[in-house]
Amino acid sequence: MALYSEKVMDHFRNPRNVGVIEDADGVGEVGNAKCGDIMKMYLKIDNDTVTDVKFETFGCASAVASSSMATELIKGKPVSEVMRLTNKAVAEALDGLPDYKMHCSVLAEEAIAKALEDYFSKHPEKRIQ
Amino acid sequence: MIYADNAATTKMSSAAIAAMMPYITEYYGNPSSLYLAGQKAKEAIERARESVARCIGAQPREILFTSGGSESDNQAILSAAMIGKKQGKRHIVSDPIEHHAVLHTLKKLEKEGFEITFLPVYGEGVVRAEDLKNAVRDDTCLVTVMYANNEIGTIQPIGEIGRFCRERGILFHTDAVQAVGHIPVDVVKDGVDLLSASAHKFHGPKGVGFLYAKRGIPLSNLIEGGAQERGKRAGTENVPGIVAAAAALEESAAKMEENARKLSALRDRLICGLSEISHSALNGDAHKRLPSNVNFCFEGIEGESLLLLLDDKGICASSGSACTSGSLDPSHVLLAIGRVHDVAHGSLRLTLGEDADTEDVDYIIRSVKEVVERLRGFSPVWRDLTSGKKPFIL
Image (cartoon, rainbow over all chains, first blue to last red; front, side):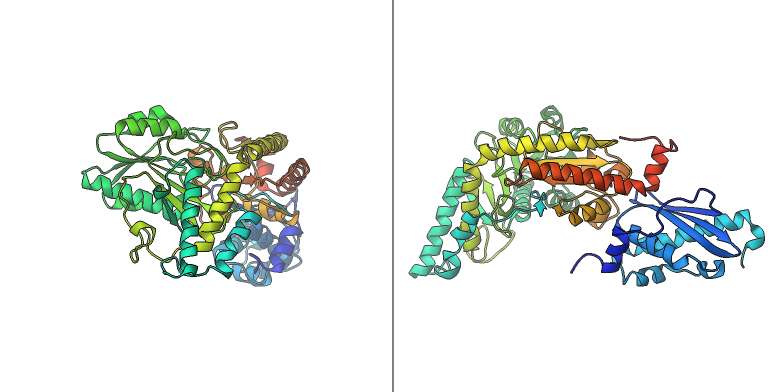
């Protein structure tokens, strides 16, 4: 059996939503180069909805695939729903990750949470309790 | 497919496969049995022992067949430690870029009260004899320094170390797994007391190796049982494996010069081509280096991604990134030569095989350039470096 599922390899080879959003409403970066994974998420939020999302990732195939899949899962979704995205949902959408790579999906969840936090800090009135 | 991971393992040679066949199909008898089929197998082992011994300048009785490099390393080091312990000597000198078979065995001995001194390897990944001279003490029972490094391919000054140890009466072990069959190894000239080798690194089968132990050095058993291998390694011998190992080594030794000449030229072409990639660096000394080994760090990318995209292009390689080792830390070898974590994660090892040609090398160069550029294209680290937010390391 291959190291990764077909879905992981597909998202790794053809990552969706790669890039930066210059005028992003929220930006979140997590991880550090020391551990070998850095993920950066850019969100465009309009009318309480994530209208656009882009990412940049330094890391292994599962980190790239996790960020790619996470962007697909949140694009066009209301902020209230995006807040509830879990790493498990990302991993499941990828047809699973090896146990020792689950932290990659955690990074994706955290990067999005951090980008949302950045957005809320700029727009406190939008914060959802 | 271009197989450029020959330091991990090699393809078995047809000579090795042909040599082992009769001992699977016809002379499958137990070498300890008295009937002809058994005795034929026993004779084959002894012929293999003579042949292996000849290839490294040893006597046949100094060769012990084992399951491979790791077992040989374990037995050599534990035996030397046992000898030292009996004389009240509990100090060992080694270096930080040894294979884990050596490092973990030393760690075990440390827990049992041995003291280990690790010699520096500097930026070039090579130990210096003068450091060894300063490190040895009256209670040093063993010096263990690898012949050539498995990751960065650097060749250590084994002859110099061996002569010094001989003068001082200290046992000297070398893990020669990457050297035997690839560069000249002569246990007498090099002053080696204990040497480990593995057959699958020189086109022999996996699961076979040998330990050279200079006559008179008492070995401790790792495996107790029957009287095979002069009572030093119990268990029915892996006859087909041993015979194939010897055939593979004979062939590698015969072609060594020719292969080394060809491979070093290809290696240098590859190093030259990959050096064109910006913010990259060769790991390990460029000259004191195995003919087949190329190891680079590329800033701003991670090794596992690099390997998988190269695999898509039909290139088999390896990396010292944490993701490929299953731990959080990148290669201990790259860290020891001073590469910081950020950079060590983006390493690539290419170890060429004898059938490689310039076309393969040029294809590898093109592919690596393409893949590095692609990964840097969406790396936040690379963005920070190129935008001046963080300084380049390489």
